[in-house]
Image (tube, rainbow, N blue to C red; front, side, top):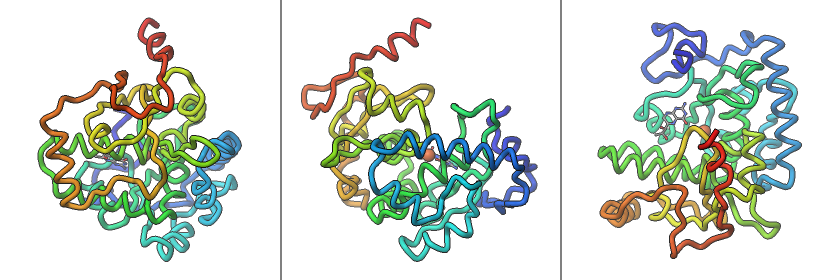
Length: 290
Ligand code: HBI
Ligand code: FE
């Protein structure tokens, strides 16, 4: 399977330790790999101007994540670690949930170290170094985002029921991966799944198709999501300080409220939603027919 992280990373199973952390091995990247990074970086940095939140570019610049080539994780960590206590570690690809949560709780962000092939320029199923380092790492310089991601790891380790873990994962999905934020200048992107995707950058902000709904913790915990296409609903946070609190008491109470209530399909708008835009669903209607 091409989605097997062992194969994708070029590593053999016996080369992967129990925590899945491996050496980034900068010398193994080819000139073509660096060129892929440069092209992706230049295209996205250009497209994101005026579309991504200011904190994203602040982080990108502070960490020296430039179009010059795939960054050295050690150089990033020299700035990141003193700033918010986070560091980036190299992993072969998607790691098991418990391993993922354990790293996040310890303020280690597991980043895929390999980069997509040129024929996968616009779409990959698994997080590569561009998604992880360009998409996520800049915002780890932001204290509120940094604290939320660590708290997500801690919460994941506390929960055991699959339904509770699914509700928790939706909070991460609709914020850290696909979140929008309201600013004085208008809606801005902050989710890494959007910020690392040229197609979704325009779609999430400008398309008439998706709903854009004010972020409400219980509402988001109940909302399913799709992993195979652009989102049908995006949720809008009023600011990073409004990232949901995941401390034990608060999350326990939120779970208790969400549990008895039915899941919500992402194509649905509820009467109580604070709507920024009611989507016309045109994108998903047409892809269903095709
Ligand atoms: N592993 N490397 C990596 N990156 C992720 O984003 C990731 C993962 N493992 C599990 C996972 N995400 C999600 O299913 C968790 O949020 C539960
Ligand atoms: Fe991600």
